[in-house]
Length: 262
Image: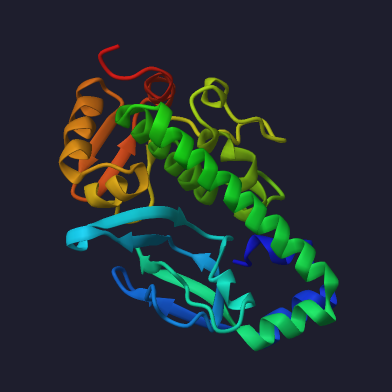
């Protein structure tokens, strides 16, 4: 599946990118790059999720952001000689188009629409990062977890049941409202076709561990395990080994708006 920014390119520019890029895969837990590696390539994710993190004192890992299909990483390669500054770890099986820095800069010079498309994509990801930081400050862990589960449920439903005439990439942007916080989670995402909103229950795709959710939410595995148990007790989830089924989307939306016990 093509990265999002490629859809904004002319046919000629898109073909030039695809002919210049290599398609690489990483298994869960593999590093796409280290923090101090020289930024020699950019990555456009075509599958899977990647966690960007730093190492703090005592080798404590601090997750900065999590990126998924359609997003771009490693744009530091546009500044020759610089380093990535973050570790990039595959959270599941990951596939990406990889462009060397020289190739990327050359393509941007030849195809100005590529610079516009990449700028728009990076701006979108920056907004998501800002929202993540806001959630860390203003929302309780239970709310952040509910939002993360809602987003995963919408992604899973989009991949399983895209609306007629739509690809998963075209449908997915319509369901990003759940990333924007509890206020926008009040309303179900609007879609162009009736019946394309997910309906409970929704089985989340992929192997999702409690530690994965802790990375996404900015918490600890122990806290996430307790909250998942609370959600299950409330009838919002069905849990198994690295398996989560959302059984009550409306209830999960309520949990995103109001902390547990409030």
